Image (tube, rainbow, N blue to C red; front, top):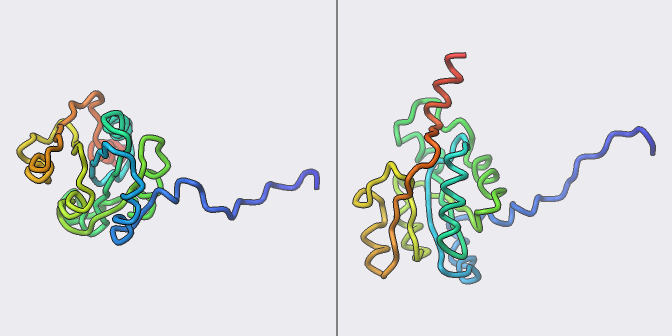
Length: 169
């Protein structure tokens, strides 16, 4: 009928299929192309630095698995009482919607070590603020012949600084 507003779609967006629980991860890994690249983080307020890092990480292999800190895990990092700003479900959806990301999962522990061991990536990537010796999983990934990289920042952006700027407004 003319003039009526479009109805919202009840279909699940295609990117939702890229979100996989830790319990389902093993089943989905069998179908992933190699080399597999792994990275992790909070990805609370997505910014240019995040998406650049994820695109660079994906370019290092055939598939990119991103593991997000759960809400409780983010809180334990000491980023502030109001973090994360976005819930895990929202952060998973935003990351899954990115073209560079093949799969996204999460971890409730303080580190992603169990996810790293679960998926045995060929390449482990973190941002340039992480020296190689401090990257969780470095010993394990190097031990099975994988590469561990700390990619230099191209854009000096930070969710914490962005929140500070918003609070000053």
